[in-house]
Image 1: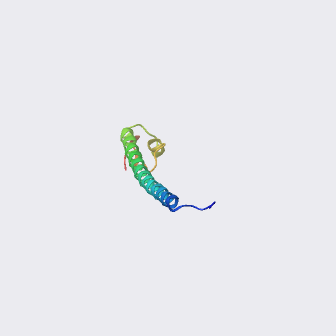
Image 2: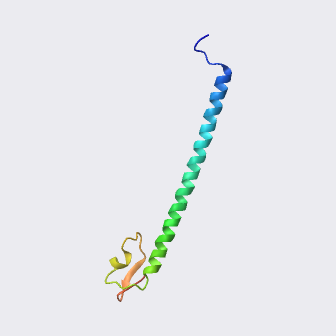
Image 3: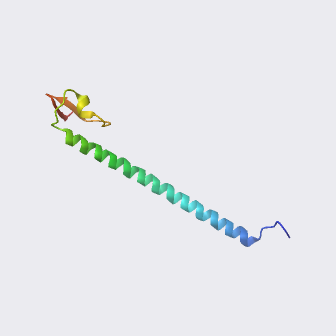
Length: 83
């Protein structure tokens, strides 16, 4: 009969769908882990950048914190220092 799907084809289709779901789940876990890793690396780099600026000449806190988000530096006596 035309247009009918055999039981074997249904089983193969179910297996393919199950494999796709498992792969998608693993991909989501991996992307979440990578996102956290990138965030941690960004935080470390930001802190290292701040460390390099300690003691740098400044006229105001903006000089110390240029291009750094959540900056922990401030300008004290014309030199960048930790808050």
